[in-house]
Amino acid sequence: MNKLLVRGWPGLPLIAALFMLGAVPAPTDQPGPQARIFRIQARSFEYTPSTLYVNPGDHVTLELTSMDYVHGVFVEGYEVNLVADPGETTRVSFVADHPGVFRMRCSVTCGAMHPFMIGKLVVGRGLGWLWAAGVALLVAIAGLRFACR
Image (cartoon, rainbow, N blue to C red; front, side, top):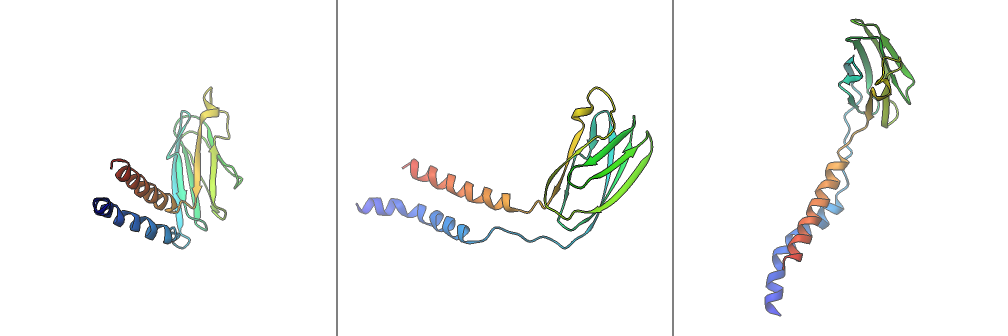
């Protein structure tokens, strides 16, 4: 019986860490609104970059440059639309005022793979996933420690 108590002690700090981490609220610190400029290159059914990350309240400027054909970018949920001729750059600005993940798609039929020319705008990416991953990792370690006994 005494050996079981002694063997159980190495897991105690891990259990304590789990409880302490569970008591700490997930991080929600977001910097204040910022001006963000994204230079998007459109070519042969792809955007570079294809994913844009902003915080709620940011003033976002999209600059679309077409590298080969006439391309467009439409941001669903914000009703923002840009169209650029080859070699041309167009721009539009808006405020990212509601959080979520919004699809960006080509608004000009540009060829056979046109339906697959998509990207996304992520508004409010917080670090909640990192906190959740830390909790999951600690739970997994605790499970392995106790399963191996």
